[in-house]
Length: 248
Ligand code: MF3
Ligand code: CO
Image 1 (tube, rainbow, N blue to C red):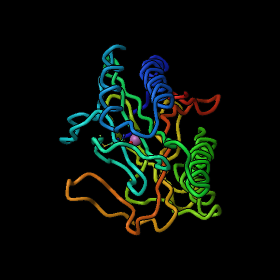
Image 2: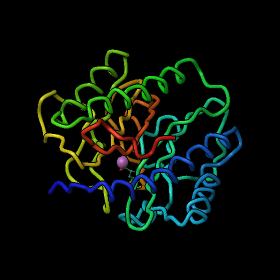
Image 3: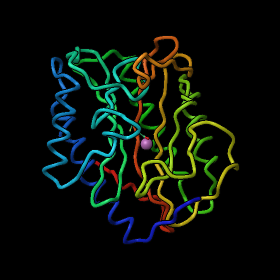
């Protein structure tokens, strides 16, 4: 079932998104070699508590942390651990913020210190892929129009798009229908309607799109060890155009 949100409900999600965006801005300012993903996770817990919000990922299907921290070849759902970030790493921090029962979801990839031109291009293209998807998030388009635009752009730039993990509608639950794949044909899938709220969250790899799962049951890595990056926003579909609820 697709849940349509009222303007008032979207406004509540925007408030959750505002806190999330502010949290990402803080993280952007603190990322440096030597910092550990677990320190970032602790910071996020504190930041959200100070703003009257809670980390929705913690306890979600048993996930143990407030954030996912996915370093280099990790695609998503990496555990924030105590291994210090190194100069040249890339790390994606993903979180879902709950404010008064309404959710917002945003992941962002960060460069640690000086990164290689290869990693830098991946980050730039992954971020642009997100915004190319957002441009298609308009009333009367179909989900497939988003999927296709993202895939076409990413592949033209020489990257593969992850298939196993997709965007999703969101509201009072983290994952609502429909799913939002970042690959596939245009003109297919559910039609976008006013009041739908979805995430677009493409994961781009330098090598193959396939992934493998670590023994922890969560951490998804690229099958070939290539780099992976991800940018994600929560977006409301409105007659005047897509409204990014997690804008930084
Ligand atoms: N934030 C993720 C998403 O975009 C969900 C992470 S799974 C969790 O859907 F278990 F960590 F919550
Ligand atoms: Co998401």
